Length: 426
Ligand code: F0G
Image (cartoon, rainbow, N blue to C red):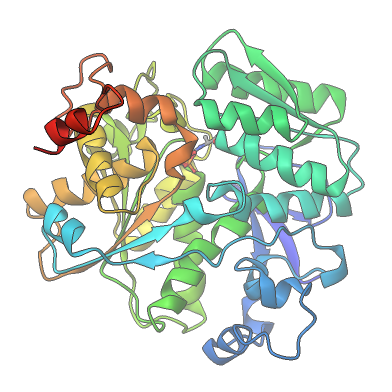
């Protein structure tokens, strides 16, 4: 098979085709590849960028996830459920370099995935695995993006999807997607952490396949954010990779991706990870500040609803990711998130609030002197601007609680006359 599941805590091993998300000891699981026997190289992955003469449906050539199939899930191409996903752009904006305070800032826009967030990269793998295992239905708890992504990929695979979302705390675009793609949508009276516990119990007792990032196959897909970014940079690792952190799936995936690239000799040096949390939803930041001696939990509250998470499930995996990469955790306020979002949006790029936390975090780390202005920084924009129209409009209209819209762009309501147009244009 080429891969197995291994417990992070006790080292126990399980076959790759066993339905399980955690170890008997309660530890988290990794998909472990036999790296030494893999024949992969920069040239192999580069050659797959050339689609000429290839079947236009072959995911090895169309998908930015399955391009790295050997390092993701070595399954037969015909089994893969793909939209396709990935192949997202890496932007450079002089305006945002200036905002952050570095010469070289790249924005990897994962909002350009088929359902508008990075979740599609993990979901193509998760749903493919669900199908291979013969699952009858799939489920997840979600702050919105996982739900939208799972609903879409489940529909593509012909599998029933059940999403557990915190009532009233999911951005409109995401809720619309879950409903539209036909997922059974359960609005749980409680926050994300409550929904997360309920979905785990439901999957265990009702025989449904769990597709949260607790599921190690999701992590394998999300690793490709890093593979693709580094390939786009000509296989030159940046100094820093900065990204928003909630349930810590991405933190885990990024660490594993970099470790594998380093072990395979595909990168020459290790970039440092900087996970950014919102101040009102910062359990990982709090633990980091104590040298990870304790696993902190909080009652989460932030305008960035995607990362409104107080008890992240991938905690141990994420700690390991930071140890491998000499990584750090930062936190930013909602005010910083929304002002930075206004900058990213006005640069013509745009993102949802949680994604702006990455850029706000980079700026803060530069101001603190942790990131040097000469260092090369990649910030991951995790979700599309249109995911959360309420946050965007609320900001520009000055209607968000406790947030001053320093960069507001308000609409003008005018009479239908040239005079009125002249007046507005000054
Ligand atoms: N950014 C966005 C836009 C997200 O949707 C999420 C997580 C994150 C960042 C944080 O990533 O959880 O891997 O640390 N959204 C999940 C969801 C929780 O349900 O859609 P993480």
